[in-house]
Image (cartoon, rainbow, N blue to C red; front, side, top):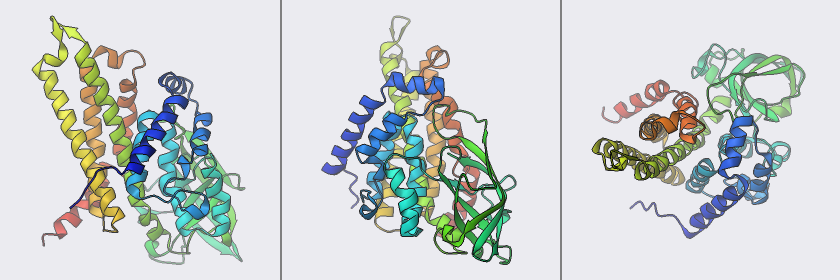
Length: 385
């Protein structure tokens, strides 16, 4: 029997994160970050000092080795109360774990420990100008010059490209016919000669450090020691981090849905029209009901995904379903919340108005709705053959 009750340790952790963020990231500070486009490094450092940035990473590297359920609850809480801090944490969930999982002691020392101490996470360079989810169409390649890999190509839509100290670059070996068997992960420092990073304009998330960047790699030379993991195993290593990436995506968007829902409920109980609170009108009640049902479904899906992953079960289908459903459902919840808030939601700087712009990218980033269907639906059908 599955029991989703939080442990005492998880309850204490959530409360500790909430207390720190309410102190370090009050609502007014979050609004200032949004208006000024600044990342609150002081609050991020406070999180690091409290040990929260190392959640889910091995103890031997300075982290706190907890299960995925706990990591998801932490990301959900940070996303609810920490505003832009969630961008760093959710990005670090897959990339820093990759270095711990596949990296050498030297790579862990160089990249993971500074992150746990309050530095930026690594960025992930997969998408390219001509290929997104189509990894087989990858053009970025490398060739060996003795023990030096020479990388050429470019990456697109690279999250945190301006802030990350290094990028995990996926490049193919052109001497191997099958890209899936010839792709390799490299740790490329941002200041390596031949690396050019340009920030791209984007829709929403103006307060977050999630700069979306294009990365050009022109005769970038890195030593063999820059390989992350095993040469030609980059595709399988990329697949291995998808579960954590999906959990980061899902727990983050649900936090947005919950915030929007709570704001809509509070307003419906306060705002009066035609002599009564608007929450007494059935059409408003219907929107509240729809939002509540979707949030309940999303939370249950997240808990089941984490529980099965922690049990070592194959969660590829459920992870794809969760990413697909929760991204769409959150957009719908935020849209209904705007409808309840009406004018106040679209005029001024109400956070739900921000959510309306920010959340749309959730249905594209980390794998679009259509890619989730393309990759997951055939696996569902296969069960019934």
